[in-house]
Length: 635
Image (cartoon, rainbow, N blue to C red; front, side, top):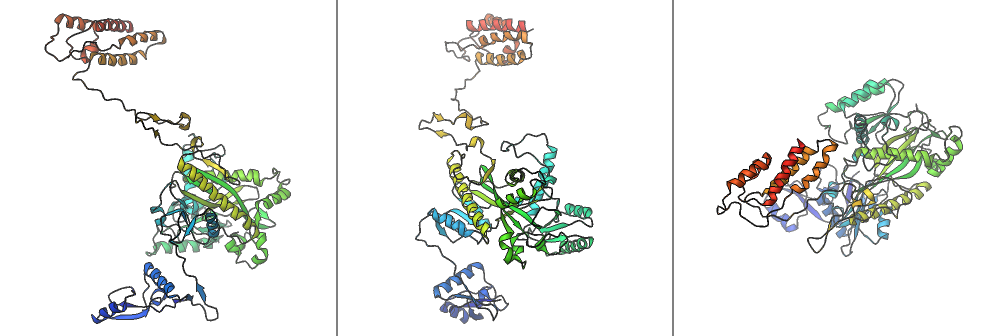
């Protein structure tokens, strides 16, 4: 299939240039006169033609050509097969520069109409240029580096945390959970972090996550080859793909041998780089849940939602979704993937899908009624098991997954992320987590989804915006007025409030501090003391204070009966003499009698540390006598 656009503009490809440029006629004529060979081609042929006739141009030139096509007023026509009508490509929408903000950007096709409707109802103006940085809200289906480089924390809202792949890819989630299990076993007696709730206790990995190995890790790949046995069923998934693409089953040694040979050929291929995250070797193999719980004989799993509404502080929510089932009856040994995968993109390939489309998606209320009627008495389950035991279990698993990756996620005020979590229930009503997906499907192709998805999107955006406003202003986050069906499972804000910086009054010496209860761990702030004029030599009272501290350390080792002697230490703190004298002045020579009396009465520690003082007051004589009596009593 080749694409063209009907445009009258011409351009030239010169021999000394790699791209086709829309030269003016005079410029092209002058270059031709210089003897440079050139070929006159249609501007859009040089852009859209995929053959080797004309080179492809860069992105900016392509956009420039599209702009010329729009100016010329000619529609772009996409050529298809001869028996199919040509498809008209709609021109790209341009921003109206006359609009005044605030602006929002919503790109992609996955639920973008819901996001755009929500923002327009708030009076925001939509922009279509992804490179603009004057937005306050951005919903992008695909992550781009430029989105995070120009992001302004506390001023803008942006969905999808930059490194969320540690949770939303199969390999990243497996690595995080295994690392968490290893550390929790090593430090099993460590206290829980302050953000943990009562229901977020540590649970073992094999209690909720099927046995999983990463193929791109050589040690884990070899372990999988060693544990594989005939008769087992393992499911192999690409680490970074969705919609059921690239999934197959491994049932026998023959299947394993073919898979192993393919991996070896990929490793030996020098054109394939191992670090590439989307390469064929980036896969996981997971033990297949052979005996799942069935709905009328059909396999099903549950889609629940995991919302990180704020990353500074962390505010994490859970919400019920829906149950999705297959069209065919479950057969673990069937080669038809539509019997094993409940993904709607896979089920659409089943010829029975059009007649069973509404029956492949169940609401949680319908699932709860089914389990109450079918299994409550037979399995001795509590009433409304779906909304009680099952809901708590999903919340525990989600919280555990979040705790494993919390320290690794990029946290800036304004980041938020909505993820989809797939759970499956086996015949023993044990809950298993299959995977977590970024950018979950928000399509509404049946009645249940038309009810669930809009409520999900609108409430999620309400939570994100309300928490963002409170966090940026330093207000109390709880209670959250917009919270309805979402359940808060992790609250990273201590005392339900964000600590504010100190507010300084007009008087620079008066500082208004926050209440002490807002800081569970008060931080010691340095207190500025007035500068003292340093003297040439330390006074005798300063050395007496040093002696006091030395004696206090000694007395602390005494028995309880001798401790009352410490009361005499208060009298050791003498004051400076009222008569100001210069200790270094030569006009006041020291008396030999006074110095000998000082030498006999003052302890050796004071004599060694104290400098020579010419004149001694009567107060110090009294202090020296008390110090001597105290020293004798301690001996």
